[in-house]
Image (cartoon, rainbow, N blue to C red; front, side, top):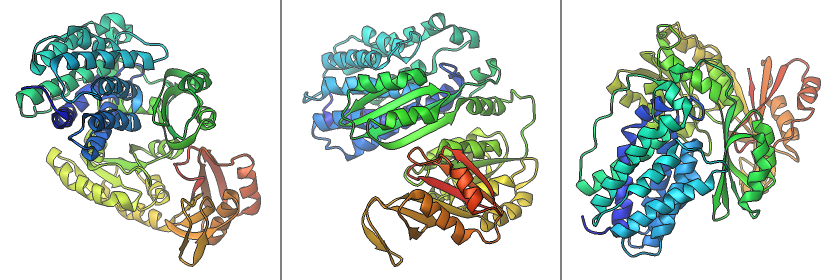
Length: 522
């Protein structure tokens, strides 16, 4: 194939993303560094898919637009340690090509090298034996007079570097695997090469072994990520501010946005420290210990036959995610402002070992994707029962009644009843001035939603929360409140217990964006 214009560059990365998706489970099964939480393939795919969405919106006749879409999309959608590093490799690649009219073999070599260099510079303490090593191996190995030759030699360099990763990272050698992020980068190069050769997509490999089984369950902390906008402070200043909170630190940015990733035992403190530099657009906190335990269960390493029924729930906010997981659910990240795709739901449904699954979408915007996932899951032998919960609270109330040893037919009546008897209270801030359901709302004013509908407005989030509880408390016994990163928490449990002595009150961190409070009355 001759040199690529901007249209071909965009097409190549779209195709490479599809190629990469074939190997997601293989890559997840390799993931043991920096912790064995089994999500490297998923995180890298989500990063590539975010870049692809931006490519779909870009002007395909201008290389500068295609390059910006590749870099900007990957940054905003970057997930996990390897995903953030991949976004920076793509950023360097994009910077190298953005002023060109066409992508030639010499420019491709330069782009691969700039991508590797940018990846290294993004990491506070670069570790060899990771995706960085493989990206550098690809860049150093790249040569040739055609794009196909350059990609072929780059892939060979990546594979050679990948084979050496167990010698550079003892944890890989212990598990008997190569680095998952590095393997993912090699798969991406395979996809680009496959585009030049017009190859059909391969069949997914069968995963025979999960490397996470080499490690016993232990405390790994929280994988915490944030995306901020309106940031004016230097990246290095933000990096230094959050560095004391943990390890695997990455703070990167472009166009006023800053993306952060860190493994920490204090996600609340970390997010509070970061929030003073800009406005939080999105946060994600995952309990890596629970992720590891889920992988062990999926691999059969807990020496138990899978129960007849599994539970999959959509949730956002690490407190809610933790609550769903404690009730036995496999969680798909998503909520009001970040709906999961059909593919996200299918990955979760496929990952549980039980033959039957109850699916809780927990948001009306997720219902259609959930229905499609239910139908498509039949292709890999899963019998999915969709319980159409429309709020997090309804989903949580239903999940409390879940018992994996029972059949869906036995569980669903009780879960449906529990969901119908609950009430979800949401307190947030109005994004614009409006008049809805007879209530006049000013931009930035605290508002209260009852079962997803605007119910009242107030002066402070606490005031709105109390008013919502008064409105919906009849016949209820338990009030559980999850507070978000921008909410006032001090003294809240005592105030609520004093105002509502007839309710059992629990106040927990980790509420979802963009809420001050999300509460459930049962």
